[in-house]
Length: 290
Length: 339
Image 1: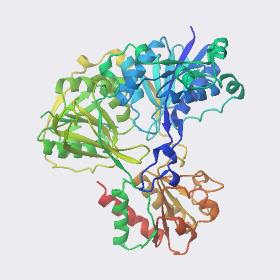
Image 2: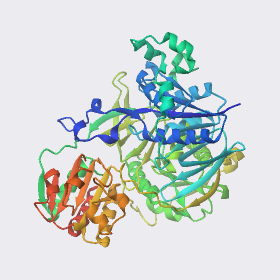
Image 3: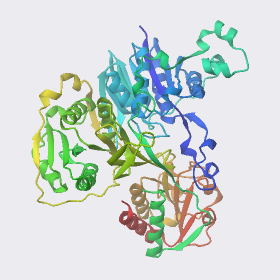
Image 4: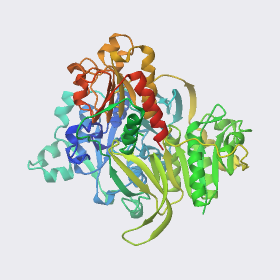
């Protein structure tokens, strides 16, 4: 039996690079102007998985993502860097999922990929920064979790040993597999694309992607089955509908307030106490700090 | 009304500040809701822990004391918390948004199938009417947090599931002693009923203090210093301000060359390029090489005693004055005015 590693990844809007060019005139973020990227810490997670694969002949790395059709871009991106194959979980019924509904959906998909040894994901996604889906999925799967990983040090005799990055130091822990690991941004960056893999997988497509393509991939995909990105909808997961999407999400968004970041004119103030205090109050009220 | 529960983090026999801050907030919420404030403390040698907690207005402390429960491991603490919550049915449950709290709370929320909001910066009690059904909810916990990279502030509610769970950021709530004579009760948790050997399969092999490699690129706020800061000692002020607002310290090449700071913090053409939400340039004149590394920052404050410094041209605010005079004031007024 091969050593199976499932990497959980998410395509996210690049919220880190909200520069002045991505701001609307009213000072709010123009979300459409933000590129969709591979969630940064998920790339750190992929690298940890690939390092295990480098050392272990029979290891396979499977990438699993949930999102719209377009999210298969990150599956291809992972294949260019060394992932063996990928699964896209996509369905309108998943829309509006909070972390609990998301982790439920992911746990169902992971169960279909059993037996597995490790699940590795980024600590958190930059659009929500919650860091909740990993631990919640681990709980639903009934397996231990190791969060804030900086280095998967060894995988031996069914025991995984991991160095964790905490606020004030590091901790080395070990546990039996299967286990779920979430990787911190202080872990090594992901390797670059490999040009051979890029050639090999550039025509990899999910089913719904093929429907949108003008080119006919039928023949190519019948000759090269590895180019097919597996796609799962609600029907493929043995799901309780009550636990999916908006219905399955206990948290509700009551209100969204845009942070006003743009200051039209430069203000010049003195170092006078009153003026400094007024500036700090303004920054706090605008949520720029605090 | 059922009660408010706070999970308290323990390090070397002391309750962590973040937990005391959340208890202080919890006390106010409990007064408003007319319910009790309860603490869950898990660890070992906790004989005298109540003396640290009662002054913050804690009415009930649930103590789980066992040598295997310190240091913290996820599964064992989650087992205790889940079972205490199943018995006590809290209305609200709060955790620190720390590496412990953010590891534990989602595990607990998943087991109890209830909603959880991460990294709250403000908690408020309020009502809610569901638009579709017209159902009215009284006294919900509004969980307020930044999202989308800090570009929006979201108010999240959990109308139907209990407890309403949230993790709260360190340093945003004020630590306040209610009374040094406040008296509550201590309840011992029957660990044997809650924990099995399976909950200890994750072993801690070692723990030690280790500084993290400096990475200022992803910091939302950068407090950067130039040659004008004057000395390595004065740079300490920049670290104080950066720590306080959750930022990192950056520097111009001149400050790095003068030996005030490590090269890893250099911003500009020969350093790193940054685009934080807020860039505070302290005593930086703003050579084009430096500006190239930071001019895409969303908001820029320049502190400089030269009103004609080039950096002021791209700054949203310019404070004319000395760094050593202005930064302590910024720190003071931030502390006085933040919630």
